Length: 147
Image (tube, helix red, strand yellow):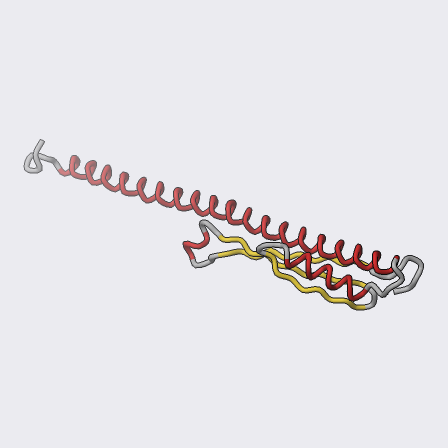
């Protein structure tokens, strides 16, 4: 059947078939984009969780190091505050990809940390990395004393 012998009804069916194919292609494209976006959120969300876990573990370790250093100094009969801060900072210095701060106030060493991880999918929209944070505290006051 050539276009010269095609009836109006045949042309209408052919146009409907062409539009249906185009509509289906757009639908598939939208579904595919949604699946890629979901995968990106899952993968890059996992990167964020990993960064937060790394930051929290570093803060916990630094606070533990501070408490241990202070206890060791106290057992030797010396003031433990300076050693606690030094130990916490030394611990943080040995943690790759983690930055943090150590503060001493009222016999409590507080450690705040953050870690970043690169994104895989979100970098396509300009978000190159995600950051996770952590915090921990350790009391360096000997047992039985008030803070």
